[in-house]
Length: 480
Picture (tube, rainbow, N blue to C red):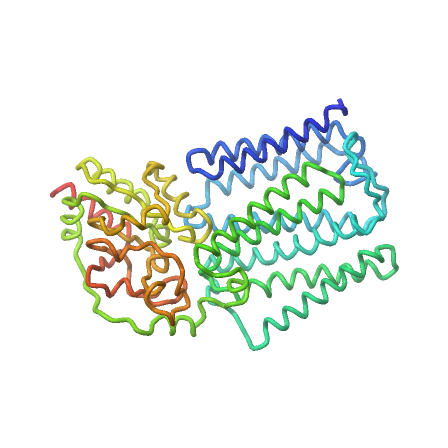
């Protein structure tokens, strides 16, 4: 059976790759999860059974009972989370799960580093790297550093998404202090890589571990709440890299493949979202975007007056429009209004109105947040149009309905050079014939920046809870 282990690993790798590929589209995302889960099941059961020594703890007795118990506990917690967590809280759940993954990777690497055992891997797939080599020690230290950083950083990201402290927490010299802490961590890792058998190695390792946890907190605290989608993606890539390093440390090629895929895809997603905001990663990590100073800069130069509108007036505009574009935002998620949106668009579609949804890459609180919400409400996938595709035709839209979106439709990104979001690609909602913005109040968005769209001549403000307003629009459209 061991002869087939390398082929099984290739098969597992293919399943992981297909799973990520399927996740790129809402139509196949659910299948992608199942395919990747099947790959993980094969890696967990078949490869463990065919291995020579226990790849989880070399030299220990392999205990299937503990594996089954742990798997069942994880399945129960995952199922409870999936069924009980509201869609509005999904970003928080993603942040927590990602943090747990990073923490688990750090614990695996830590246990491998501090115990004195021989090195043996999966039969038939030896990496030919001795246990006492600097490479293996470096892999364990890297996994510990990145995994613990991802764990503590994800906890802070969760708290920010929960609204505990959305604004950046900064103080003079913060970046310098963080840089010094990072240098100390890297120095300890460098020393431990070549002195793992030293008598002081355990103490140095514990200090490094503690500093890494603290650095994760210190790294995420200064980041503005509006940048949380990028941070979640970045921390997800960190977790993947930690898992890959674990794979090298314990000679598990399935972990190497899975971690590398997560790390590379998370990194690419992070860079793509930064490109969508026209900001480098360094600006996201060190720019304290969303601070009071940035908000004041964004409020400068606003010209015009706010023009409210009533639901029955909006219903007439929608009912007699030829083309309507809906721009969903986090406000729609907070109001749990996605099902009301679908009901409204179905009614408009029955009247012959062309309806589309304009999706901004960083709308919401996590990557793909709007796609998930709309898919949950059974909005047809072909109505979801990416920003780059829909912007060239926005001037031919009769009514643009902005539901809870703010920063991703702010014309200040084009018009105000003093704005901190200047140069950020946005959905050109202000180019349509009539723009209806649905908000509870005139409060600034998650980034704390005044929205110039509210003051445009072709913009009308429909104030109130998004779900209640949409229900009123549905009733008014049906009655028209």
